[in-house]
Image (cartoon, rainbow, N blue to C red; front, side, top):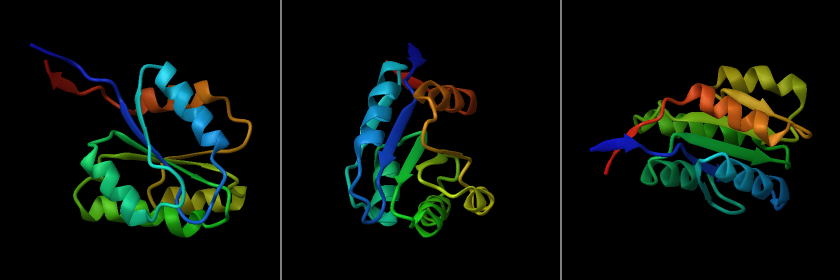
Length: 138
């Protein structure tokens, strides 16, 4: 008998950004919304993030950046996922992202950007509206 498995989300802090309070709050909120959350920790390379996402077979990759390197790190993660045949993973971003950078990031495959002050329920709702639950053997 099969049943739906929870939406699996990997949250990551690419680059040299050392601020993790917001992403930890988001991780708890998504977990409370019924999702399975994996946090890779600080200072991850795009390669490490993509490899973890593939190994963990997640549905969503959430990237958080406060360091200003989002225009290089976010597209790099998406590019690696596509190259590895995992373009089905939803990639979203958050942090301090200038409004003028959002069109570029979306063009590069980042589906949504959530800035400071975004309610965590809004992020959970976005994820749930963009991911079709998968069945798991059980």
